[in-house]
Image (cartoon, rainbow, N blue to C red; front, side, top):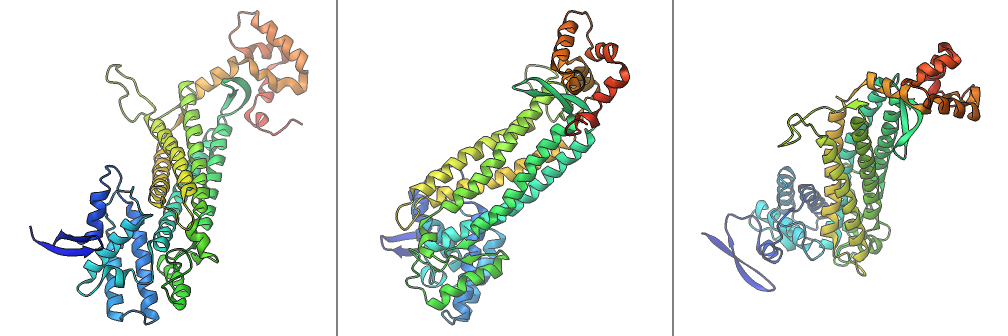
Length: 443
């Protein structure tokens, strides 16, 4: 195997000549032999955006030879198009290994004479590059998620309209309660997703303030003042995102609470997915709706079909809630001027956004084919004793209670027929009409 020799402060290593990374990446691969997830492609792409912005700022201010800067910019664009990284997501050093990986790959792609630290990392530190890249990656992921939640909201709004004419019995504490329509149940789901859409769209604001230019601890030490004021503008131009340099870069470098706030929004979305998917399972179990069959449900029970899409989405919700704990713990474990646990934080946050996007798309596609069993809804509705509640404004609580107790002593199965005998079909039909049940109070 052909190799090249590289050195760092710990000594020398032989690197295969066909590898684009260098000694710092090799040491990281040896030091962190974790199996499982690799550094997110979204984060690698964002790191390339950041390095490109830094090269542009250095070039415009004549702080770097134009030919070198152009070579670095070209290499960044190649990485943006193919953002792969062999490093495990969990690594010590607050993201230093990922930063050094991107420096080395850019330098090797850029060609001879480009140094990974002297040139690619000029006027930078992991401590301003990495958190900035996490925010850039998270904003892109948030935008993609918001679009998918919007689609999910639209799906349930269509189901709300489709089922608006179907009366059903609500349940509280899993016991029959007052009547409403099946459309109203799905409208409640749609409203929850509408809030998720709004929250995911708005929380991008929490990520727009970056610490790029602050170098190691936010003081900008080793970076020219002109560069510090320009580099975030360059990043804004490259990404098309509304980024701005933090007023207090020491704060932005030391504190990661913005990520906790955004993760909380992800947890809220996960909570809604869990609750609504479980409700859909219950409606399916109660035979009010029919979920699409997507695969055989048992290796032993012929003909069994399970709500596997809903179960998968619910597991995403559980995972995202667990990731929220990870983000919170990582942010709170930072010490003094740095957050050492940013790699785990980034992995958990970006994973949550990606998982939620996939889950929302899965659920939207699945829900489009949900059918209502109108005959079963009607059967359950007219058998329920709780439809008497709709008559309270007319007959009062005591009279309604007497009617229910009397009906229990009869052999009749259909409560509506009994009420027809008591009040006449015209009054019963009017009282139990969907438009009356959903009229928001009686007149």
